[in-house]
Structure formats: C-alpha cells, structure tokens
Length: 342
Ligand SMILES: Cc1cc2nc3c(=O)[nH]c(=O)nc-3n(C[C@H](O)[C@H](O)[C@H](O)COP(=O)(O)OP(=O)(O)OC[C@H]3O[C@@H](n4cnc5c(N)ncnc54)[C@H](O)[C@@H]3O)c2cc1C
Image (cartoon, rainbow, N blue to C red; front, side, top):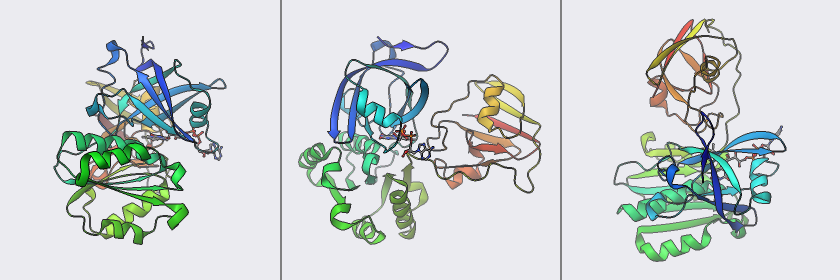
C-alpha cells in the first residue's frame, strides 16, 4: 500500500523486483498501488524523483523510467553506479525486493514530440534509460522509424543489450541500432557521429548521456544545420555553475511577486537567494525537483523585471527569450521581479 506523506507529493512505493542489468547497474521495478495509479502515470522519457536517507541524511535524486507506458509493463527505473556517488551506489548495494522507497510523481520534458518524423536517438551509458522508453514507445504506438547511436565503454557495460537485439528482430527495418564501444573505437568523435548521420533525412533528435558525449552530439547536429527545435536534450548532471554574485548593472532586488496556483504573493527578497528559495521563504510550495538546473520542473515566466540563471540545462534559447527561467537557478537582477508559474 502506498502512503502519501502528509502535505507532500511523496509516496512510499514498494519495490517488487530488483533486476541486475550489468555489473554496475540495476533496475528497480515498482508496485504502484491502485490509489496512486493516476499520480504515477507518465510519458516515455520522464523521470521519478526519489528521496532516500543514507547514513541519516536525506538525498533527492532523479531517475528516468526505463519502462514504456505503452507496453503495460510495471514502472521501472534503471540506476547505474556513479563512482563515489552516494545514492546510486546505495541503490546498487542495498535495495532488495520488498523494500520501500519514497518517490515523487513523474515529471520531465524529454518526451516524444507530436510529429511523425523519424527518430534519431543518441545515448551514452546510463543515458539509454529514457531513450529506451522513448524508442520502444514510439515503435509500439506510431509508424515512425528509429535510429539509435548507443555509446559505451565496452561490451559488458551495454545496458539492455539483449532487449535491443529482440526489438531489432521484432521491428525489422523500422529500427537500426549502432553500438559504439570505446574499447574498440576510442571515444566518440565528430567523424563517427557524422558517419552515423549520413543519409538521415528530416528527423527529431533525442540525446542523453555524459556531458562530453552530449556536447559532441549537440555540436555535430548544429554543424549539420539541424533546427534546434528538433533536438531534445536530457542532461543527468549540472553544468559548472557560474558565479552567483551580482554582476555589474544588476539592481538590488526588494521584492519578488509570485503567481502560483492562482494566488499572488509578494515576497521580500533576501540577497543571495534564488527565486525558488524566495518562494519557499514566503511559505509557497513551488514545484522543484533536481535543483541543479537539469530537469525543468521549477520553470516560471518572468513577466516583469529580469533574472539571471546560474545553470541552464533544460530551457532552449527561444524559451529563455520568452522570459522562462529555472527558478532553482535564477537570481533576480531588477528592483522588482514578477514570476508566473505554469
Ligand atoms: C532528469 C534526470 C534523470 C536522471 N536519470 C538517471 C537514470 O535513469 N539513471 C541513472 O543512473 N542516473 C540518472 N540520473 C542521475 C542521477 O540523478 C544521479 O545524479 C546519479 O545517480 C548520481 O547520484 P549519486 O548520489 O550516486 O552521486 P552523488 O553523490 O550526487 O555524486 C555525483 C558525483 O559527484 C562526485 N562528488 C560528490 N561529492 C563530491 C565532492 N564533495 N567533491 C568532488 N566530487 C564529489 C561523486 O564522486 C560522483 O562522481 C538522472 C539525473 C537527472 C537530472
């Protein structure tokens, strides 16, 4: 039975199965109780935010669903060890079937677009997780063709290798999977990416993987004149933060006016706080998740004044130009700032 923690959107979910994927990666399968099925409905490519307590300290981490909502399979996430990381190693080392874990409802914007263009996906390491859900969903629910470039260090670190082989047999020429192994070809180069892209027509591109891999793919797509609106990125890590100190020309902020859930609140601004922190200090339950500028859960639109983001791995240039900010990363830079949550 899932239990909602008081006044919060966190539910305790039972783990029905723990599946070993590779030597350093497991999948957790969740039982979603009937009374929480609506809350845990998700789109392919979205993620859960887990809240786990390790050695007495609570941590929040995002993990994308590797299951497909279109295939009537139970909710599943897939977690790869991050060397030195707290939560991913705790999950790989200690979580067993029958255990319970606190999770927030699914969120995320790395989801299928509504076009019927072919899909070209680039995944590196654990970045396969949301991509696996996206491509299996697209194959099952649309007629779109899929091409996957999947990079890993070596053959034994390829997550979902067997299922991908099965999908290739099932869907024939609707899917092409290209495995890139660093152990055989060295790290992914622009030349390798360009070779893979040769002959690809109009498509939607989905990219998820380590920072350097994503940077290489992004640059290659840009050089190939792929429209930015057709490139969908999911970053698992935050970029190096820029300086949070006020820049020359920034005004001293007095107040932040926040429109959330049809209520308008005027909050006093305390120097050094982000817009999200300001909303919380005013007693508001503003949406947030990764708090690293990666997931996009906390977006709001600046409709008066201005704000500067420390990190932005979620919004594209057009959204920023329209005034959207990641409130967890946004420092106000004018005397008054008004923000409106979606
Ligand atoms: C939207 C989203 C979806 C995601 N989906 C997935 C997924 O499907 N699968 C998956 O495996 N991961 C996913 N991630 C990544 C995941 O959320 C975690 O970031 C990852 O598991 C690492 O967490 P951790 O607690 O193990 O590491 P952390 O403890 O957060 O450490 C991360 C890294 O920082 C280093 N580090 C920590 N503290 C210090 C310090 N003081 N000095 C120097 N270095 C330090 C650690 O050594 C480690 O390498 C996703 C992230 C996002 C934002």
